Length: 335
Picture 1 (tube, rainbow, N blue to C red):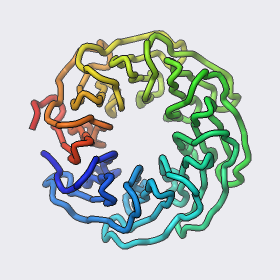
Picture 2: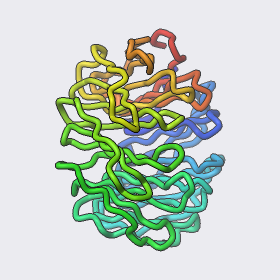
Picture 3: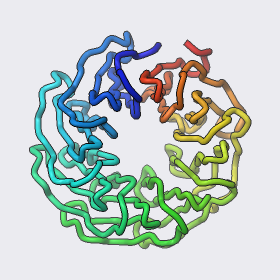
């Protein structure tokens, strides 16, 4: 199924937490919400001065948070499309926006070198100002008590979610960090860098646990398995690898399907499969244990920016610079 309606590059797409809806954001200055089963467009959100860079559902699916290249973020009622609040204060493009697990706090990461914590009324709770260059990514810990930031200044940092105090600095990469993620239990952190490595850190002490080496070009993305024991990485060398999260040992290599850099990686809910998206206009489905290619998802006309599994693991959602999103049955041929 193809979701058509955007008039410019589609940069992001996500399932709602219950899998019943899909949200897409694009450079046409709109955000759209779709019925995941029928593909019918439910809402079109407008009022952005520039393209929308990031969007997130709240954990209960009732709110949408959007972040724009114009430096503003907004909250919306995800069912009605009603505007709820403006999150104003950044002075440059917002790269990412995320909710905390409770759904009562939002954090934004910006090219103005800061991240900001907000409540759902739009009030500013804390400004996280420690990075020397733009903030590339941001995430709440699973317990909501800390916030992880990554930056082009080669460092990742942990902050107190309510105070904004710096708790840890993760310093070890030689080049910009593209993104950082907590493990599902919050005990570990993975960072990925254009220095061709990913690194695993202890989230409590900040100690380095393992360096995930072997890629020959910059690492663009990574994700933990649902049990936190493995990490999949994707790189500009067109290869994805699965590593042991504790030892850094390579467990599987996924190569041969992509002709350009890998932009997105994700495990399914059982940790049995991995989906990759790449700038060769395709996504691919792999066996996470063996690295064997299961199927190639071809049909987009431009780079695929991201791919994710539906919450039930039966479908894959892709977002492309061709202005469309597609829903693919897992293991099935192209729609």
